[in-house]
Image 1 (tube, helix red, strand yellow):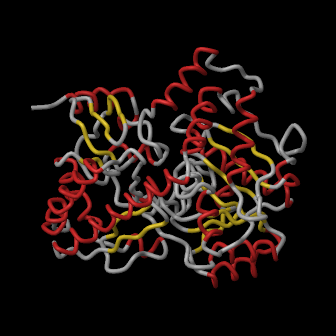
Image 2 (tube, rainbow, N blue to C red; image 1 turned 45 degrees about the vertical axis):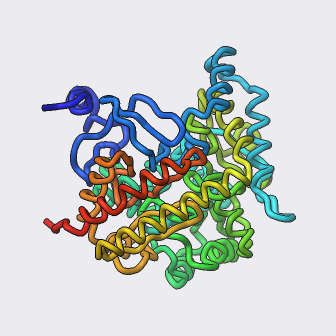
Image 3 (spheres, rainbow, N blue to C red; image 1 turned 180 degrees about the horizontal axis):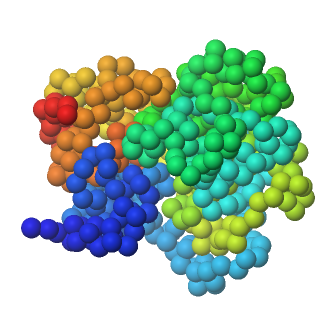
Length: 441
């Protein structure tokens, strides 16, 4: 007997490649039928069959305040009533750009002087790389294995996220000469970074790095590593692009960069990229940096970037409302809830005798089915991934929605209250037992 989700997936596969519009949604690594979501509110989502789940996906991060927050919804509705898109500047764009620049600060450090709004994280990182090449007159890019920076050509070599889930080394359709412009090295490896600059330094335009890796599972930078990237790149005349599409305004009012600065690790990236939270769940992303670099973008400079829907007024309204509501109290609540769930997860897996480590970066965390938290892509892949599918489905059967991949972060929101946290905690031992029973193959 099928339910509404089965029927929808069958229909979707007849008109959409794989039945989904983003690969990880297909449940390829966990099996079964994807849940087609019909609605969401606060800390819960409801599928097409009418079943409600406590949500630990949060739209892959944007729902910091919870789903369908009434003030954000009202802001979007008000904006929609004035027009869906203009293809012209709006006052809201100026306000959002200024708010982004103002939030990313620590003491006297204000690394963002200019902001360009775009529509997706992929577009933000693609533009940041073009900008770095235009600023330096160099071609090569350094990235880290397992880091995901969107699906533009040249960035899918040894990427994380859906590529890790699908066990693909890259992507068909990317010409070899383009892929050759990207140098992939191991994450958290200072020697590798020094070696690549020793060999290719004069040709390297930039190093791009997730502020904290979260697309091969959560793998935080080792102490001082992000600062070492900035120092090494700058010593060779290259730029540092810090990708905060996922972590930006998620783990701290100033993003992961701000979290590190507050902990005493100060460094100055040249270009930041933002997405997800910055648009409040609507399609919006941004890049920002110091004026001398950002002003190389058209129309002032020779680096071209354009977009009909860039700075879309509905997305801008959602972003402004989200950032204005994202107070220190919100971050404190999310941090506390995430720490509580992570602790309960650790306890449940330990009690079930499952080898595991729970890694975190601020409020982001996820389990790895290995004895120690991974430090790089190779270690992230060296785990008992077969245990995650039964764990995932057991949680779902208990009414808790997890990311459908072991390589994705878990997200709490400010809307997760005591009832939702208790429902998660009650489900974890059952899921841990399912993981313990799992057999490889």
